[in-house]
Image (cartoon, rainbow, N blue to C red; front, side, top):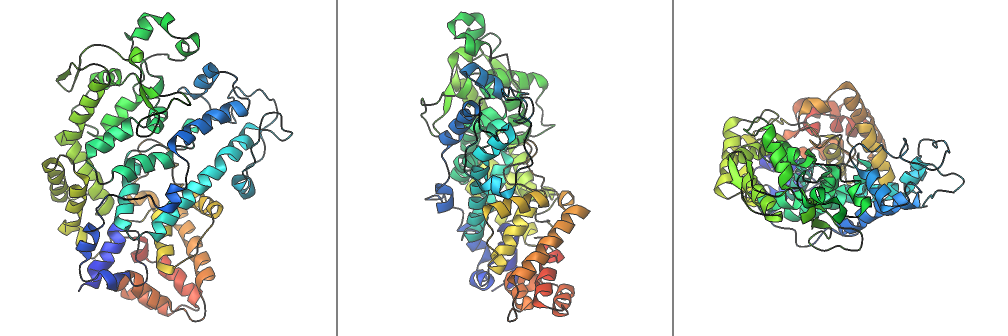
Length: 508
């Protein structure tokens, strides 16, 4: 029996120990982790209650019209094309009313739909009224699942893959989409092959809109050669080839930078995936209901990427390239590096990376086998915590360890905003950083201290023993220095706060 390995399993691979966890799994911590590497048979209830992907897409369409920002399909597509301003700037607003004040927590939680013509209309307030409640519910669901799960390693992997294939609400057109994208891609395929997940990500409507591929058109496509075949409203919006999705698949999703591809490869790949778009409202089918291949937008003819020619036609051509990328040795190394960095160390040991990359290559990217290879790494079981918890994991581990506090969705969104990591709001397609230095500046540390103090005040009572809590959730990882500081605390509240800001609790 090893309480130390149990503490490592629950904190380094999971989302923090709950009271009783360490003793329960101490007999076989590695087996406990590997037992979690099975597909999810049913969505957790909070996730199942969230809107569908099609609803996410159509809600944004309807907001555009209901808010009076556009009055036609053509204007709607223009609002979503690359470079369109954020709602509240100069986004074709017909009303000259000044922008309203910064939304309050009550505004954010209110389901009231503000429409053009309302006395208090502003684009910002309308946007918050439509999408604020959806975002709050999504964050609450994500956090509740992380707190309550009996499979925290699986949940960490879901979060990892959701961040690897980032779609962000920071782009207005995808405001409502990241939760359903994570559910459809990362959660559904976390134990599939990497190639299956890559295909699901690349064809998901959220990714197609986020990286603008749905408005990309081949320069020699049927539409460009014979523009009168398409309605004028659509001809006006499809301006040309867009390389965003092709570039990010190569750089961020598969091969990684400096892996041998060229700008010509990016351009050719962008041509390969022209025609990958989404269906109009009410015309949905398929896995997520919205992916649609339009042959009239596709660049015809064979194309060469990284020295390999692709003579397939239409959709088959793009899927053939994705299969090549999923199996490429550079992809195995890139994915292994990211996984080892996430779970083991900011500076991944090369031999650990190679062990995980080998599992990737040997199993054709089987993510269950790749995840199990992480568990088998000797470097993952060193007693010294090497990774700083980002704000979301820090909060989740505190609530799991203390049994509370259970915050409302509005409280969670406000707290995450203060701590610098709003779920689903990464600044760019490279997602949230996995490097500790990005989370330990003066302001982030101060925000954690504020959180720890507030939790200590709210959770402590006269009968609570902070040292006993520390033993339950950190086990042998609780250092003598922290033990002494907590023991000398003037009150249980101060003792809990000291425990939550200790280096061993903030790291894993």
